[in-house]
Length: 287
Ligand SMILES: NC(=O)c1ccc[n+]([C@@H]2O[C@H](COP(=O)([O-])OP(=O)(O)OC[C@H]3O[C@@H](n4cnc5c(N)ncnc54)[C@H](OP(=O)(O)O)[C@@H]3O)[C@@H](O)[C@H]2O)c1
Image 1 (spheres, rainbow, N blue to C red):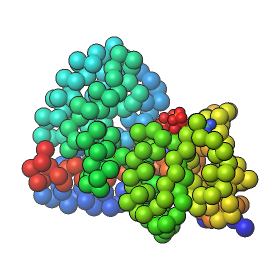
Image 2: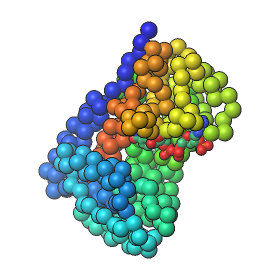
Image 3: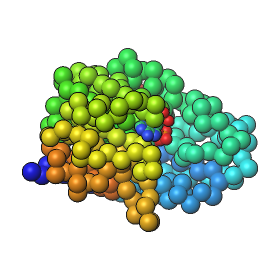
Image 4: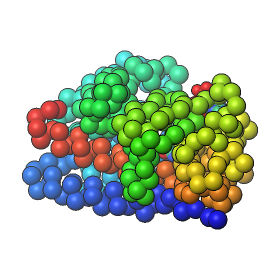
């Protein structure tokens, strides 16, 4: 038996189409959605991520403002740029590419972004709102995963969902999003005991470890018909891989997402969606 491949490229292009239409609608009302990107230092991977996000914005008609800072940037200089962008009426979303150099605090930097322009959905304000079912801007990767469930009509209510990740970026926002859909959520991490047993009992597994030397989700660990979402990305011999071997896991799973081509494209699509949402909120005079 072989399950259905969850095709993030196709689903993300549908989201982008919707974003493009919403952008055109906003433009017709005199609002040009705009994302400010902030890149610090010369990490080539970070530079590529920012370039890809800018390209994706251009494709749906979102304007970008590019800010590149040297790796010696101080926290005070960083705060000053964020304050300027918070005040800039033309800017609807602010994206600070992580990781930051050691002299800058990710928490202080993220917290300084106006919650109304927080298109990564990571400020303390928006993560708090998420836990109360009130967030307008939600973390992009978990939102992208929820969009995949929706597209493939994968039911969540009453299902045992195990998330192998407890980061602020992935696992923690997923807790609230999954609870909102009435799933029974288990969070596993590096200190979880008998992870194979935990996985065996899950209807749905979302895995995001990102290091095959520490963890691989194998077909033996899952039950027949489990839904597997692989968030992880790491490199093996120059190739992008996730936490499981897609070709093996799909033999036992009812649905599985590949790496690449699964969750990754959804993350960028949800960033675009958040930028348009932030621009729409500005229409209400909220930024
Ligand atoms: N496709 C995308 O768009 C996208 C977006 C975001 C992240 N990612 C990828 O997702 C992965 C996770 O990202 P992240 O930022 O959340 O990283 P992270 O903060 O390092 O999270 C990794 C998680 O894995 C857990 N873990 C480590 N070893 C484990 C083990 N042996 N058994 C069970 N759990 C274990 C960690 O547990 P502890 O908390 O106990 O350390 C932690 O919760 C990375 O590969 C990243 O590249 C992809």
